[in-house]
Amino acid sequence: FKQKTAYEIYQCDWSSDVCSSDLRMMNVRMLGSVLVVDDSVDIQRLLRLWLTAAGYEVFVAADVDEAMRTLGTQTIEVALCDVHLPSNGEGIELAGWIARQCPRTQVIFATAVDDLDPRVTLRSHVSAYVTKPLVRTDLLAALNQAMRELRLRLAQSTRRRQLPAGADKGVRSEEHTS
Image 1 (cartoon, rainbow, N blue to C red):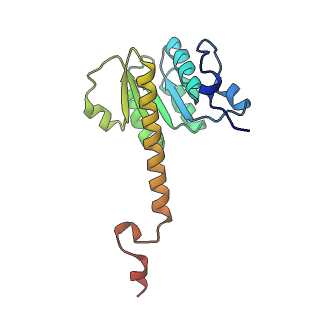
Image 2: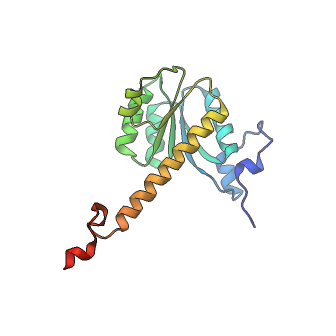
Image 3: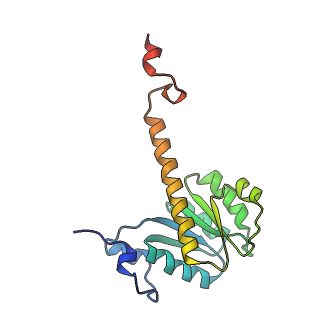
């Protein structure tokens, strides 16, 4: 029995408002977990549809506080953050917090400003940014790239931990015992 991805199940049904928990109950393999941080309920709903249909487990937060609570209780692989959150903090501040508190979470900025200063993204440890109005194919490409980068980084970290002492510095461990 081959598991189907959410995309295979809901390929043509963009109008359905299925959520990630429904797909988990149907034994559908999720591609990864995404936290959407945006104060617009319409954008939250649209992104939940797009990302769930593409096979991602989706969580939403309307502000920085709610995002921090979700990041504290869920394993999130990518946070898709609006740069400007009017209620209680900016997406840039949240990205910095994520880099310090959740280093295994990639951050993608969603912004209406297409000339975001690259120094801002570097300081905030942001892997990519997409411009609004959002284009589904561009968003999914950025998300897939962020997932690949995360998995590569985790695999490298695992390999480093499995190496004998000194092997990661180009020194073979047998040389230490002679």
